[in-house]
Image (cartoon, rainbow, N blue to C red; front, side, top):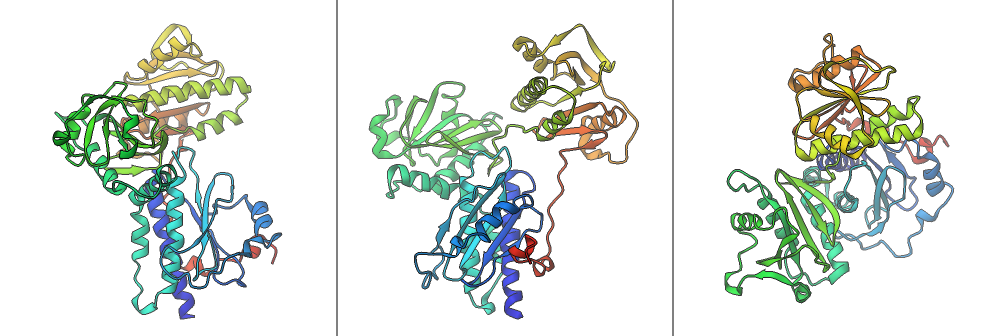
Amino acid sequence: MIADFSKRLRIFNVMEGLTEGLSRFCGRPTRVAFLYAEKYDDPLVLYDPHKLLDGHEYRLKELYVDSAIWRSCPLRLDGLTLFGEMFPEKDLGLSGIISYGGRTGNIFYQMWFVEHHPDVASTGPIERWLENAVCVLSHDFAIDDTFYTATSRLVLREYASYAVRDYIMDELNLLIGWDMPYMVSSVLEAILEISRTPEEGFFPEGKLTIIEPSKLDSVRLLMGFPHDEQPSLFNKRHVRKLLTAVKQSSTTLVSDGKKILGIAYDTISSPAIVADFRKAYGFLFINRKLVCSFAEGKFFATTRRPTLVEFEEILVESDLDKDTRDDLLSIVTHIVQEATEKQHGASIVVDLGSPPLKLSGQHLDKPLLLTNRENLALACRLSKLDGAIHIGRDLHLYAFSCLLDGLAVPNENRSRGARFNSALRFSHQHPEVVVITVSADRPVSIFQNGIELTSTIPLETSLSSLYKAPSLEAWLGLK
């Protein structure tokens, strides 16, 4: 019984570390589930405290009950006791879920599942995170209870930078081989340091490209530095100043991972790590594939592009025809993206009623059809003004600088400001409208019927829930 409790505690700590770390990395609560069999003959046990796998019963039954392929392992696992020794199990291809697992000498089979948010830039770092979870849990099962500590939870919670590093190293190894001429972790740390280094009050803007030295012959520099005068990549203030020379242009700083070599056109095709600095945030690429974003000295999984899933669901349930729904979603998404890119607040009232409401604001003598590109660009500019813009179900802009008033509602939040609470009140008073607000610091909120549809609830789990973890067959209702 003590051994069972000890193992449950190990699983719980790994699960909590993953949930906390991935929720930070993805920028929102992120559900995690776990399926495992400790020994070859053991039944599969499922731990899914937040119902992530609901709706995937048929596929899981097909993979693990109707077939015994998962039990077959062509190579012996005996002797795989060192940390990191494992046979990987690839993604199962479940819709809306990232999965990754493995087999080790201490746990015959593991499969970890993570919620796949629509704005994730790349699944690569998350897969590397799950791969590490397989190794960490296997290691924890192997060590003696007397020396056990709960450090696994902390390790997995703070794994973001290492997950990005591991993924980039895997990609570079495929492209240029195992002999890495520079430390990827040091390069990534330098990028984060540069990103939070201001110059005359402004954060960096421009691109930095790190190229493997053996590929430099294929790069044509517009301007190079003498060998003995090449600035160090790790001199963050010097590099920050040099980025000024390439901002808002088609050029990039070029580095070999240790020094800044010069400036070239941003058309480099060689395998490279590219950091695209955009003032308060930036994007990281490997061989022109987006890996993640970064801000405030940390890496994030998000593309930083707003996803209006809740608004799309409202439109699907409305009486609008499909073409109108698609156009309205495209219009609102464009306005929201412009506001987030330009980092200004905005409020959008989408009026699904007929005829549209008469809002208190600046009306137009003739509504503007927003499927017209010039009119849509004007609507984006008008969204910068105080108040809300008013869009009807017919895709026309009716007014701007609209005041959203209404009676107080119980779920107001004084810490969220006037834009947030006005949207709550107005949508409660007018159920035919959807209000979308964009804060200057990027969060997007969607309101209907006095409820914020985009609100998130922190995930909570308890160790006691592990005692109730069923076998997979019991979860499927087969036992």
